[in-house]
Amino acid sequence: MSIQVNNLVKTYGEQTAVNHISFQVNKGEIVGFLGPNGAGKSTTMKIITGYIHSNEGEARICGLNVQESPLEIKKKIGYLPELNALYYDMYVKEYLGFLAEVHQVPNKKLRIEEVIGMTGLTPERNKKIGQLSKGYKQRVGLAAALIHDPEVLVLDEPTSGLDPNQIIEIREVIKSQGKDKTVLFSSHILQEVEAICDRVIIINNGVLVADNTLPGLRAQFQTESLEDIFRKLTYSN
Image (tube, rainbow, N blue to C red; front, side):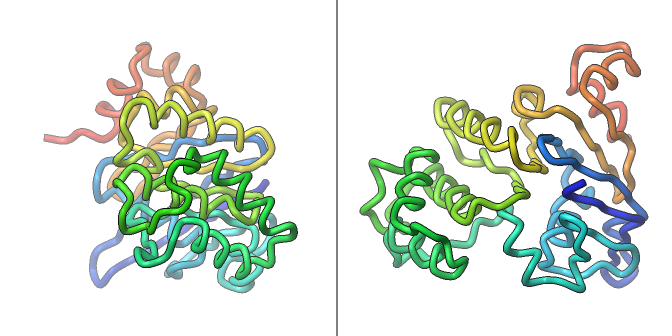
C-alpha cells in the first residue's frame, strides 16, 4: 500500500484535531477524503506529507515512516496544500524549473513542458505567477506537485478557484494520474468526488466515520446522493 495511516492522533493544546484514525490507500486508487470544516482533513494531510508531526500513531508512504524518513518521503509525494504558497515574483517556467532542480528531475526542460501542457498552463507559461488569476495559480500548484513524477499525490482542494471548464480539465488530469499513482483527494465539491474517486473516506470531529466505495456507501445508506450520506454522517444540530 502506498499510504498507510495507523492510529493517528494530533492535538493542539486541549483540542484533539485527529483522533485515532486509520486507513490505507493503494497504488492506482483515487480516494476522496471528506469532512466538514475543522474535521481534521488538512491536519491529516500535513502529517502524511511530513509537514507536521502526530502526537501518536504513524503514517507511512510506500512503506517508509514519515517521521523517520522525511526527505525520502518528500521525493515520493506530490502535495498541493489548501493554502497554495507560491513565489509570486517568479515566472511560471522559472518556478517549475526551480522545483525541477530541487528534485533533480532528469530531462528537466522536457518535463517542464509536459507538466505545463498537462495542467493547461501553456497560455500563461511566460507570465509572473503574481499576475495570474486564482484558477491559474491553482494550476501552477498542481504542476508543482506533479513536476517530479511522484508515486503519491496528496491534493487538498485542488479545484478551488477554478471555473466549471477548468474543473473538468483538472478532473481529467487527476483521473489520468490516478491510473498509476496513489491519489488522496480532498474537496468540498461532492460532485467532483463522485466523478473522480474510487473510494471515499469521511471524517468528522477528527474521527473516521466512513471508509467505503461509493456503491458500498449508497447501498449502506439506501440513497444515491453522496450529499445525503455526508450530511447523515457529519451533521449535528
